[in-house]
View (cartoon, one colour):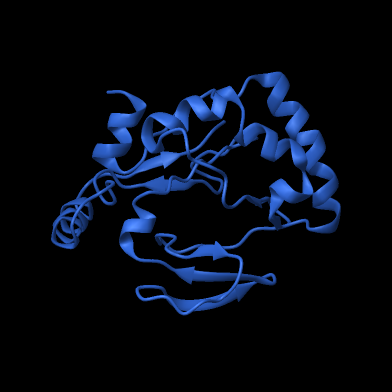
Length: 183
C-alpha cells in the first residue's frame, strides 16, 4: 500500500527514516536553543527555528504531502513537544480538531474559539479538516515505554461522511492500534 492510499484508507501512515541522519541532527541542534526557554515544547516552531519552515518546503517533505493534498499544500502550524523524564504529561486519546487562525471572525460553521499561547484557535467545518494533513516527525527514539502517538486504522479516513465516520469509530474501537514511534 502506498503512503497516499494508506492515508486515504486508514487516516494515517507511518514512515520510518523520512529524514536523513545529517538533517535530523542539524535540526536537533537548532531546536535545542528554543528548549532553553521553553523546555516542554514550542508553539510556532517554524517562526522560531527557520530551518523548520525550510524543511516543510523541502523535497523530502513535499514528496510525502503533495500526493495527498496537492502542490498548494503549505505549513499552517508547527509545534514541538519535548516529552522526557523532566517534562512529561499524560494525554488522553483525542483527535485534534482546532486550527490556528490569524484572528477571530464570525463565520458559519466555525465554532469553539480559544486562545493558546496568544494564538487564536477555532474548530472549523469538517471539510476544512479533511483537507489538512498532520506530518509528525520524531527526532529521537520513542518506544512503547515512552510517549508516542497512537493511530487507529480506519478511524479518520479523509473525505468521509459523518455516518461513515461514526461506523468507522465503532469498528476502530475494536481494532488494534498502531504506535507511531521511533524516528
